[in-house]
Image (tube, rainbow, N blue to C red):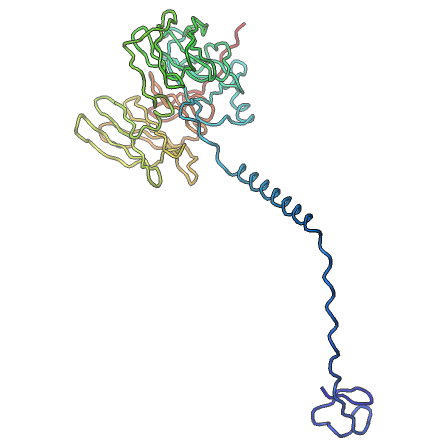
Length: 392
Protein backbone atom coordinates (compact mmCIF):
# COMPACT_ATOMS: atom_id res chain seq x y z
CA UNK A 1 0.00 0.00 0.00
CA UNK A 2 1.33 3.56 -0.91
CA UNK A 3 0.78 6.44 1.56
CA UNK A 4 1.51 10.18 1.58
CA UNK A 5 4.46 11.01 3.90
CA UNK A 6 2.70 14.21 5.04
CA UNK A 7 -1.00 13.43 5.49
CA UNK A 8 -1.09 9.65 5.21
CA UNK A 9 -3.60 9.65 2.35
CA UNK A 10 -3.74 6.57 0.10
CA UNK A 11 -2.16 7.11 -3.32
CA UNK A 12 -2.94 5.38 -6.57
CA UNK A 13 -0.26 3.21 -8.09
CA UNK A 14 0.46 5.86 -10.74
CA UNK A 15 1.04 8.67 -8.18
CA UNK A 16 4.59 7.60 -7.23
CA UNK A 17 7.07 10.58 -7.12
CA UNK A 18 4.39 13.19 -7.95
CA UNK A 19 2.34 15.52 -5.77
CA UNK A 20 -0.18 14.33 -3.16
CA UNK A 21 -3.63 15.22 -4.51
CA UNK A 22 -4.84 15.81 -0.95
CA UNK A 23 -2.17 17.95 0.74
CA UNK A 24 0.06 18.91 -2.27
CA UNK A 25 3.26 17.48 -0.70
CA UNK A 26 6.12 16.76 -3.12
CA UNK A 27 7.48 13.20 -3.41
CA UNK A 28 4.70 11.98 -1.16
CA UNK A 29 5.26 8.20 -1.58
CA UNK A 30 5.97 6.17 1.57
CA UNK A 31 5.83 2.41 2.01
CA UNK A 32 3.61 1.10 4.78
CA UNK A 33 5.54 -0.05 7.76
CA UNK A 34 6.12 -3.74 8.02
CA UNK A 35 4.25 -5.37 10.77
CA UNK A 36 6.07 -5.56 14.05
CA UNK A 37 7.01 -8.71 15.78
CA UNK A 38 4.04 -10.86 16.84
CA UNK A 39 3.17 -10.59 20.45
CA UNK A 40 3.55 -13.83 22.28
CA UNK A 41 0.34 -15.83 22.70
CA UNK A 42 -1.35 -15.43 25.99
CA UNK A 43 -0.70 -18.25 28.37
CA UNK A 44 -3.64 -20.67 28.54
CA UNK A 45 -5.90 -20.26 31.49
CA UNK A 46 -5.24 -22.68 34.26
CA UNK A 47 -7.74 -25.61 34.09
CA UNK A 48 -9.19 -27.52 37.00
CA UNK A 49 -6.99 -30.07 38.68
CA UNK A 50 -7.01 -33.57 37.18
CA UNK A 51 -8.97 -35.00 40.12
CA UNK A 52 -11.74 -32.45 39.53
CA UNK A 53 -11.88 -33.39 35.84
CA UNK A 54 -12.28 -37.06 36.71
CA UNK A 55 -15.07 -36.27 39.18
CA UNK A 56 -16.91 -34.13 36.61
CA UNK A 57 -16.65 -36.86 33.96
CA UNK A 58 -18.03 -39.43 36.38
CA UNK A 59 -20.94 -37.17 37.32
CA UNK A 60 -21.80 -36.58 33.66
CA UNK A 61 -21.74 -40.34 33.01
CA UNK A 62 -24.13 -40.96 35.90
CA UNK A 63 -26.52 -38.29 34.60
CA UNK A 64 -26.36 -39.82 31.10
CA UNK A 65 -27.17 -43.27 32.41
CA UNK A 66 -30.06 -41.85 34.41
CA UNK A 67 -31.56 -40.25 31.30
CA UNK A 68 -31.10 -43.48 29.36
CA UNK A 69 -32.82 -45.53 32.06
CA UNK A 70 -35.67 -43.04 32.26
CA UNK A 71 -36.08 -43.17 28.46
CA UNK A 72 -36.13 -46.96 28.40
CA UNK A 73 -38.64 -47.04 31.24
CA UNK A 74 -40.94 -44.78 29.30
CA UNK A 75 -40.84 -46.49 25.91
CA UNK A 76 -40.55 -50.19 26.72
CA UNK A 77 -43.94 -51.95 26.39
CA UNK A 78 -45.29 -53.77 29.42
CA UNK A 79 -43.90 -57.27 29.69
CA UNK A 80 -46.12 -60.29 29.18
CA UNK A 81 -46.81 -62.56 32.11
CA UNK A 82 -44.87 -65.69 32.84
CA UNK A 83 -46.41 -68.71 31.08
CA UNK A 84 -47.75 -70.10 34.37
CA UNK A 85 -49.44 -66.82 35.26
CA UNK A 86 -53.14 -66.44 34.53
CA UNK A 87 -52.97 -62.64 34.33
CA UNK A 88 -53.46 -61.53 30.75
CA UNK A 89 -51.91 -58.08 31.12
CA UNK A 90 -50.10 -56.00 33.65
CA UNK A 91 -52.59 -54.49 36.07
CA UNK A 92 -54.16 -51.36 34.62
CA UNK A 93 -53.80 -48.05 36.38
CA UNK A 94 -56.19 -46.59 38.90
CA UNK A 95 -58.21 -44.85 36.19
CA UNK A 96 -58.98 -48.16 34.49
CA UNK A 97 -60.02 -49.75 37.77
CA UNK A 98 -62.21 -46.76 38.60
CA UNK A 99 -63.86 -46.90 35.17
CA UNK A 100 -64.60 -50.60 35.60
CA UNK A 101 -65.87 -50.28 39.16
CA UNK A 102 -63.67 -52.91 40.79
CA UNK A 103 -65.26 -54.25 43.98
CA UNK A 104 -67.88 -51.53 43.64
CA UNK A 105 -71.52 -51.48 44.77
CA UNK A 106 -74.25 -53.60 43.22
CA UNK A 107 -75.08 -52.39 39.73
CA UNK A 108 -71.60 -50.94 39.15
CA UNK A 109 -69.65 -52.42 36.23
CA UNK A 110 -67.75 -55.52 37.29
CA UNK A 111 -63.98 -55.33 36.78
CA UNK A 112 -62.04 -58.40 35.73
CA UNK A 113 -58.47 -58.31 34.44
CA UNK A 114 -57.70 -62.05 34.43
CA UNK A 115 -58.23 -64.53 31.62
CA UNK A 116 -59.92 -67.12 33.88
CA UNK A 117 -63.51 -67.80 32.81
CA UNK A 118 -65.69 -70.85 33.48
CA UNK A 119 -69.40 -71.68 33.78
CA UNK A 120 -71.69 -73.09 36.47
CA UNK A 121 -75.40 -72.98 37.35
CA UNK A 122 -75.49 -70.24 39.96
CA UNK A 123 -79.26 -69.65 40.09
CA UNK A 124 -80.90 -72.92 39.03
CA UNK A 125 -82.32 -71.73 35.69
CA UNK A 126 -80.24 -74.20 33.63
CA UNK A 127 -78.60 -71.34 31.69
CA UNK A 128 -74.78 -71.37 31.97
CA UNK A 129 -73.67 -68.60 34.31
CA UNK A 130 -70.15 -67.21 33.78
CA UNK A 131 -67.78 -67.23 36.74
CA UNK A 132 -64.82 -64.83 36.84
CA UNK A 133 -62.53 -63.00 39.24
CA UNK A 134 -63.65 -59.56 40.37
CA UNK A 135 -60.21 -58.09 40.66
CA UNK A 136 -58.88 -55.47 43.05
CA UNK A 137 -55.40 -54.09 43.72
CA UNK A 138 -53.97 -57.13 45.50
CA UNK A 139 -57.05 -59.17 46.33
CA UNK A 140 -60.19 -60.26 44.56
CA UNK A 141 -63.39 -62.24 44.82
CA UNK A 142 -64.87 -65.03 42.74
CA UNK A 143 -68.09 -63.74 41.17
CA UNK A 144 -70.93 -65.62 39.49
CA UNK A 145 -72.92 -63.65 36.91
CA UNK A 146 -76.43 -64.36 35.63
CA UNK A 147 -75.96 -65.65 32.08
CA UNK A 148 -79.24 -64.08 30.94
CA UNK A 149 -78.92 -60.55 32.35
CA UNK A 150 -75.27 -59.98 33.31
CA UNK A 151 -76.22 -59.11 36.89
CA UNK A 152 -73.81 -60.40 39.51
CA UNK A 153 -75.38 -63.11 41.67
CA UNK A 154 -72.83 -63.62 44.44
CA UNK A 155 -69.26 -62.82 45.40
CA UNK A 156 -67.00 -65.04 47.48
CA UNK A 157 -64.85 -64.03 50.39
CA UNK A 158 -61.68 -62.18 49.25
CA UNK A 159 -58.61 -64.06 48.02
CA UNK A 160 -55.10 -62.67 48.16
CA UNK A 161 -53.66 -62.36 44.64
CA UNK A 162 -56.42 -64.26 42.80
CA UNK A 163 -55.24 -66.78 40.24
CA UNK A 164 -56.54 -70.32 39.56
CA UNK A 165 -60.24 -70.72 38.72
CA UNK A 166 -62.22 -73.72 37.43
CA UNK A 167 -65.78 -75.07 37.30
CA UNK A 168 -65.44 -78.87 37.37
CA UNK A 169 -69.23 -79.33 37.39
CA UNK A 170 -72.39 -77.21 37.46
CA UNK A 171 -72.48 -77.03 41.26
CA UNK A 172 -68.83 -76.44 42.19
CA UNK A 173 -66.29 -73.66 41.66
CA UNK A 174 -62.60 -74.19 42.51
CA UNK A 175 -60.37 -71.20 43.24
CA UNK A 176 -56.88 -70.46 44.52
CA UNK A 177 -54.51 -67.56 45.17
CA UNK A 178 -51.20 -66.85 43.47
CA UNK A 179 -49.06 -67.63 46.53
CA UNK A 180 -51.27 -69.93 48.64
CA UNK A 181 -50.89 -73.74 48.23
CA UNK A 182 -54.60 -74.20 48.93
CA UNK A 183 -57.44 -75.02 46.55
CA UNK A 184 -60.87 -73.96 47.83
CA UNK A 185 -64.22 -75.35 46.69
CA UNK A 186 -67.15 -72.91 46.56
CA UNK A 187 -70.84 -73.73 46.29
CA UNK A 188 -71.96 -72.54 42.84
CA UNK A 189 -75.32 -71.37 44.23
CA UNK A 190 -74.03 -69.29 47.16
CA UNK A 191 -70.29 -68.74 46.77
CA UNK A 192 -69.74 -70.15 50.28
CA UNK A 193 -66.69 -72.31 50.90
CA UNK A 194 -67.35 -76.07 51.10
CA UNK A 195 -63.81 -77.27 51.76
CA UNK A 196 -60.16 -76.30 51.42
CA UNK A 197 -57.50 -78.74 50.21
CA UNK A 198 -53.87 -78.17 51.19
CA UNK A 199 -51.49 -78.98 48.34
CA UNK A 200 -47.69 -79.36 48.11
CA UNK A 201 -47.50 -76.27 45.88
CA UNK A 202 -49.66 -73.45 44.52
CA UNK A 203 -52.51 -74.74 42.27
CA UNK A 204 -52.60 -73.61 38.68
CA UNK A 205 -54.75 -75.70 36.30
CA UNK A 206 -57.57 -78.18 36.93
CA UNK A 207 -58.60 -81.18 34.79
CA UNK A 208 -62.08 -82.55 35.47
CA UNK A 209 -62.71 -86.23 36.10
CA UNK A 210 -65.62 -88.30 37.43
CA UNK A 211 -66.22 -86.93 40.93
CA UNK A 212 -62.61 -85.76 41.16
CA UNK A 213 -60.06 -83.47 39.55
CA UNK A 214 -56.35 -83.53 38.77
CA UNK A 215 -54.57 -80.32 39.73
CA UNK A 216 -51.45 -79.08 37.95
CA UNK A 217 -49.38 -77.02 40.36
CA UNK A 218 -47.05 -74.19 39.48
CA UNK A 219 -43.98 -76.34 40.17
CA UNK A 220 -45.13 -78.80 37.49
CA UNK A 221 -46.28 -81.52 39.92
CA UNK A 222 -49.83 -82.88 39.95
CA UNK A 223 -52.27 -84.07 42.61
CA UNK A 224 -55.75 -85.60 42.54
CA UNK A 225 -58.59 -84.26 44.70
CA UNK A 226 -62.05 -85.69 45.42
CA UNK A 227 -64.82 -83.16 44.85
CA UNK A 228 -67.12 -84.37 47.62
CA UNK A 229 -64.77 -83.53 50.48
CA UNK A 230 -61.45 -82.25 49.17
CA UNK A 231 -59.38 -85.33 50.08
CA UNK A 232 -56.14 -85.65 48.15
CA UNK A 233 -56.38 -88.88 46.13
CA UNK A 234 -55.64 -90.09 42.61
CA UNK A 235 -58.18 -89.16 39.93
CA UNK A 236 -57.97 -91.88 37.26
CA UNK A 237 -60.55 -90.23 35.01
CA UNK A 238 -58.53 -87.00 34.73
CA UNK A 239 -55.05 -87.56 33.26
CA UNK A 240 -52.34 -85.12 34.35
CA UNK A 241 -52.46 -82.02 32.13
CA UNK A 242 -49.52 -81.01 29.98
CA UNK A 243 -47.06 -78.46 31.28
CA UNK A 244 -48.42 -76.05 28.68
CA UNK A 245 -52.03 -76.38 29.84
CA UNK A 246 -54.01 -73.28 30.68
CA UNK A 247 -55.44 -70.17 29.11
CA UNK A 248 -52.06 -68.58 28.35
CA UNK A 249 -51.08 -71.52 26.17
CA UNK A 250 -54.57 -72.18 24.83
CA UNK A 251 -54.73 -68.81 23.11
CA UNK A 252 -51.25 -69.44 21.63
CA UNK A 253 -52.45 -72.66 19.96
CA UNK A 254 -52.04 -72.16 16.22
CA UNK A 255 -54.30 -73.25 14.60
CA UNK A 256 -57.33 -72.99 16.86
CA UNK A 257 -60.10 -75.46 16.04
CA UNK A 258 -63.83 -75.39 16.87
CA UNK A 259 -66.68 -77.69 15.87
CA UNK A 260 -69.76 -75.96 14.40
CA UNK A 261 -72.40 -78.53 13.53
CA UNK A 262 -70.70 -81.19 11.42
CA UNK A 263 -67.97 -78.82 10.21
CA UNK A 264 -64.62 -78.31 11.88
CA UNK A 265 -63.41 -74.72 11.52
CA UNK A 266 -59.70 -74.04 11.94
CA UNK A 267 -58.29 -70.53 12.52
CA UNK A 268 -54.62 -69.91 11.66
CA UNK A 269 -52.33 -66.90 12.10
CA UNK A 270 -49.16 -66.28 10.13
CA UNK A 271 -46.06 -66.49 12.30
CA UNK A 272 -43.75 -64.47 10.04
CA UNK A 273 -44.45 -60.84 9.23
CA UNK A 274 -47.92 -59.54 9.98
CA UNK A 275 -50.01 -62.16 11.89
CA UNK A 276 -52.85 -62.12 9.37
CA UNK A 277 -55.69 -64.57 9.97
CA UNK A 278 -57.04 -67.29 7.70
CA UNK A 279 -59.70 -69.95 8.23
CA UNK A 280 -60.54 -73.33 6.77
CA UNK A 281 -63.68 -75.48 6.98
CA UNK A 282 -63.33 -79.26 7.01
CA UNK A 283 -65.79 -82.12 7.11
CA UNK A 284 -63.85 -85.17 8.12
CA UNK A 285 -60.75 -85.23 5.91
CA UNK A 286 -62.37 -83.11 3.17
CA UNK A 287 -61.53 -79.41 2.95
CA UNK A 288 -64.71 -77.45 2.17
CA UNK A 289 -63.29 -73.96 1.89
CA UNK A 290 -60.39 -71.68 2.77
CA UNK A 291 -60.74 -67.99 3.52
CA UNK A 292 -58.35 -65.11 4.24
CA UNK A 293 -59.84 -62.87 6.92
CA UNK A 294 -59.77 -59.04 7.12
CA UNK A 295 -58.16 -59.02 10.56
CA UNK A 296 -54.94 -59.88 12.35
CA UNK A 297 -54.23 -61.76 15.52
CA UNK A 298 -53.18 -59.68 18.54
CA UNK A 299 -49.64 -60.45 19.65
CA UNK A 300 -48.21 -60.99 23.12
CA UNK A 301 -44.96 -62.58 24.17
CA UNK A 302 -43.79 -62.37 20.56
CA UNK A 303 -46.50 -64.78 19.35
CA UNK A 304 -50.09 -64.33 18.12
CA UNK A 305 -53.15 -64.89 20.32
CA UNK A 306 -56.02 -66.64 18.53
CA UNK A 307 -59.63 -66.21 19.68
CA UNK A 308 -62.28 -68.47 18.11
CA UNK A 309 -65.66 -69.70 19.38
CA UNK A 310 -68.50 -71.70 17.88
CA UNK A 311 -71.96 -70.36 18.74
CA UNK A 312 -75.32 -69.77 17.08
CA UNK A 313 -74.38 -71.86 14.05
CA UNK A 314 -71.36 -69.64 13.28
CA UNK A 315 -67.64 -69.53 13.91
CA UNK A 316 -66.98 -66.24 15.71
CA UNK A 317 -63.49 -64.69 15.45
CA UNK A 318 -62.03 -61.77 17.38
CA UNK A 319 -58.99 -60.04 15.91
CA UNK A 320 -57.42 -56.61 15.57
CA UNK A 321 -56.93 -54.01 12.87
CA UNK A 322 -55.40 -50.57 12.49
CA UNK A 323 -51.83 -49.36 12.17
CA UNK A 324 -51.02 -50.13 15.80
CA UNK A 325 -53.24 -53.25 15.98
CA UNK A 326 -55.34 -51.62 18.69
CA UNK A 327 -58.75 -51.70 16.99
CA UNK A 328 -60.78 -54.79 17.86
CA UNK A 329 -62.77 -56.47 15.09
CA UNK A 330 -65.36 -59.24 15.31
CA UNK A 331 -66.56 -61.40 12.45
CA UNK A 332 -68.67 -64.52 11.96
CA UNK A 333 -68.09 -67.25 9.39
CA UNK A 334 -70.66 -69.58 7.87
CA UNK A 335 -69.28 -73.05 8.65
CA UNK A 336 -70.54 -74.68 5.44
CA UNK A 337 -69.33 -72.09 2.91
CA UNK A 338 -66.81 -69.89 4.71
CA UNK A 339 -68.81 -66.79 3.79
CA UNK A 340 -68.37 -63.88 6.19
CA UNK A 341 -71.81 -63.23 7.69
CA UNK A 342 -70.68 -59.98 9.27
CA UNK A 343 -67.42 -58.18 9.91
CA UNK A 344 -67.35 -55.04 11.99
CA UNK A 345 -65.38 -52.88 14.38
CA UNK A 346 -65.65 -54.05 17.97
CA UNK A 347 -64.67 -51.01 19.98
CA UNK A 348 -67.80 -51.67 22.04
CA UNK A 349 -65.95 -54.67 23.49
CA UNK A 350 -63.29 -52.52 25.15
CA UNK A 351 -59.54 -53.02 24.98
CA UNK A 352 -57.21 -55.99 24.90
CA UNK A 353 -58.96 -59.38 24.75
CA UNK A 354 -58.14 -61.80 27.56
CA UNK A 355 -60.61 -64.66 27.02
CA UNK A 356 -63.32 -65.73 24.59
CA UNK A 357 -65.66 -68.67 25.29
CA UNK A 358 -69.03 -69.80 24.00
CA UNK A 359 -71.67 -71.28 26.28
CA UNK A 360 -75.44 -71.37 25.92
CA UNK A 361 -76.82 -68.64 23.65
CA UNK A 362 -73.87 -66.23 23.82
CA UNK A 363 -70.16 -65.76 23.25
CA UNK A 364 -68.58 -64.40 26.43
CA UNK A 365 -65.66 -62.01 26.07
CA UNK A 366 -63.30 -60.76 28.79
CA UNK A 367 -61.74 -57.59 27.40
CA UNK A 368 -61.10 -54.03 28.48
CA UNK A 369 -61.35 -55.04 32.17
CA UNK A 370 -64.95 -56.20 31.70
CA UNK A 371 -67.05 -59.28 30.97
CA UNK A 372 -69.57 -58.99 28.13
CA UNK A 373 -72.05 -61.33 26.47
CA UNK A 374 -72.02 -61.09 22.66
CA UNK A 375 -74.86 -62.12 20.35
CA UNK A 376 -73.18 -64.45 17.80
CA UNK A 377 -75.79 -63.51 15.17
CA UNK A 378 -74.87 -59.81 15.11
CA UNK A 379 -71.65 -59.26 17.07
CA UNK A 380 -73.48 -56.83 19.37
CA UNK A 381 -72.87 -56.80 23.12
CA UNK A 382 -76.03 -57.98 24.88
CA UNK A 383 -74.88 -56.95 28.35
CA UNK A 384 -71.87 -55.91 30.38
CA UNK A 385 -71.58 -57.68 33.73
CA UNK A 386 -72.29 -55.74 36.91
CA UNK A 387 -71.19 -56.36 40.47
CA UNK A 388 -73.36 -58.52 42.75
CA UNK A 389 -75.10 -57.10 45.81
CA UNK A 390 -72.93 -57.07 48.91
CA UNK A 391 -73.60 -59.72 51.51
CA UNK A 392 -75.61 -58.40 54.50
